[in-house]
Amino acid sequence: MADKRTPHIVIPEPGDPDRKRALNVLAQRRYRQKKREKAQSRLHRADLPADPSPQVASTSSKATLPNTTPFWDLSMPVIAGSHDFFEVDTTITQIDSASSVSTIASSTATHGTGDANGLVDFDISTFPIPADFTSELQRLESSQFTFPDDRAIDVPELQVMKAGLSIAGMLGCAESMWDISAHRVCDKSLISTPFLPANLKPTDIQCRIPHHPIFDLLPWPSVRTKFIIVFSQPANVRPPMARDPLALMQLIYDMDDSAEGLKVSGSDFLSVENWEVGQLFFKHWWWAFDRSVVDTSNALRAKRGSPKLMLGPT
Image (cartoon, rainbow, N blue to C red):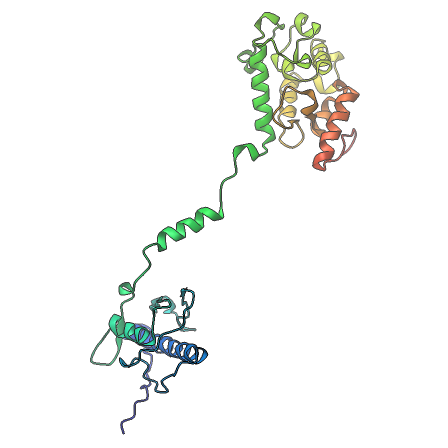
């Protein structure tokens, strides 16, 4: 009787043109062996007669695998320790309840071609891939990440900017506020809305003393009044922070500070209860803020877990 044992294959050295085909043959053998073992195991579990012969590809075998959920078999072997790892062709075969042992074996013969040396070229491009494979990947990608709605993104600088521009439009100073040298008094006839909240209505000081429009955007009447009065005085009698020729620019920088400048909570920027003074703004300009402003700011900061406003080293 002829010896039917699988002949031993010697893997050629790297660079040999037959190396890839030899690796493919070894991979196919391991793959088919695993498929045979799985098929035998399924047949035994289903109490079906299993063919003891290793030739499971017999055309007379009609044993049907038990109904199982379709799955993808990714058990293709990997040749460890070889730098030609990515040259080994892999096979993905979909097995469902209609598959049989003979179908598994015959698929290998269908998709491989032999040569005189007994080596097999394996063409993975001929294996079937589900038509909805690409659409399924796209569905999974889209379901794993959705960009949050812009209303859920908390950007303090953006909220303060939007609130400031809206207030400037209501007070008629949307253009002049961008001129660092602008000075004006509030003209109540320029107010565009009759429903301006009391805390945003111009005070007597705003209507009598020329000042930069940036002061008109602050939501606290007493704070606006103090800033206008102080900046209308000679530099030598102002508080130290307000004496510099660029003090107004420093004030704007502190208001716009992303971490500890001005903040507005929620969507109702017209409510004074939603405005907060940050630590940096408070540290530099503390003399302009009433106790009520500090208390409201501390309450809003406590909700975020931030420490209370304080003077001195921080």
